[in-house]
Amino acid sequence: MTFILYIALHSIRDMLCDLSVVVVNYNVRYFLEYCLLSVRKASADLRVQVIVVDNASSDGDYRWLAERFPEVIFKQNAQNQGFGKANNQGLSLADGEFVLFLNPDTIVPENALRECVDFFRKTNDCGALGVYMMDGKGHFLPESKRSNPTPAVSFYKLSGLEKLFPRSKVFGQYALGYLDENRTFPVPILAGAFLMARKSLLEKVGGFDEAFFMYGEDIDLSFRLQNNTGFRNYFLGTVKILHFKGESSKQDSLHYNKIFNDAMGVFVRKYHSNIKASLMHGSIRLGTSLRAIALKGKRKKEKGKNGADIGGLFLEGDADVKAILMPKLRQKMPTAPLSNTIDAAENIVFCIGENYAFEKSLEDLSQYSNDKNFYWFDPKINTIIGSNDKNETGVVWKL
Image (cartoon, rainbow, N blue to C red; front, top):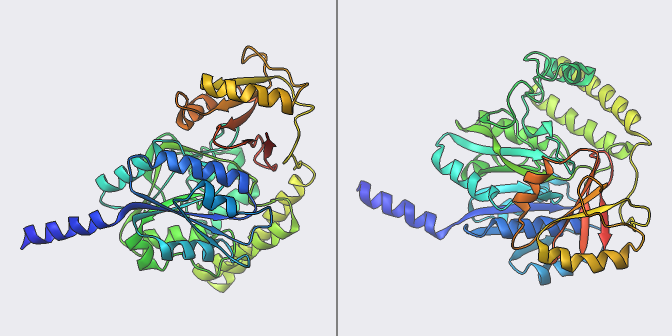
């Protein structure tokens, strides 16, 4: 009987794909294209299903997606349904043993998906996981690992005490700054930009709570996955991805401020008493308002910049891809000097090809000086992208 059950379970697994990747897109078509290309490359030795749910984007015609990525299931909403509801739409189409919710403004290196799936298969108590996320300058993004936003933790975060004492076990609890970001350990809260979970557990907890339109839904889902299933959430510091910040939202806007405050209000009312919820929500509103004031005027719109005033460029990576890119750059940016050395360049373009993978570009990114700007080019896509300040909209150079 045991042998028959074993065979049955393995037969069911063989019928499923290993992983379903759900990407919710909103007005970031050029970053989405790189995201899908990177997922395709990272899926080489896995059975992967990719689902894109577009929330009524207005930044162009998305029919190109079906032509460029015929393997992708594409669903386009007539209205913006919000992040949680759109992810649930993707989840309803998912056939994978595991499901990855992935932001469109990410690049997933070739090793990432396999290492995550392998971790699930060897770690029986892992119900969900997140990874080390870096921004377009190679900086670690602290939201990659977080603790539960209790009143005290929220106060330390919003008062600035966490920023002053990021490694403190008391004041640095929000982003768990006292834990080494290059290691692996259980954590309470994962980031929705890269959240992989067992599909069976997502179905058990009901997916995302659609009361959250945007922001806070990843905190809520992480909380339920860890507290209502008997499994644990893990942070994998050994797996690194690129997350271009500032693409899907303008965080200095009144619109962002309202959505974020509304989301936090939903969360605190869901898990705390009326008095505690009122105190927490008041603190959060004050903190986000102060942050919006600090950021206002700092964000610069750079998308579509023609490169006429850019400094020296250094091409790093695949030699064949460099040869393809060089004449395109001379035509696009005739006054921009091409540097022969990294030290003399203000800007580095990572040229992705057969001999230089996304994974290698992320390794190099973390080694280079922060006073440079970084961009990515793959000849399969006729744009260069980059994002060199997490508080600014990224750069897209159309070639």
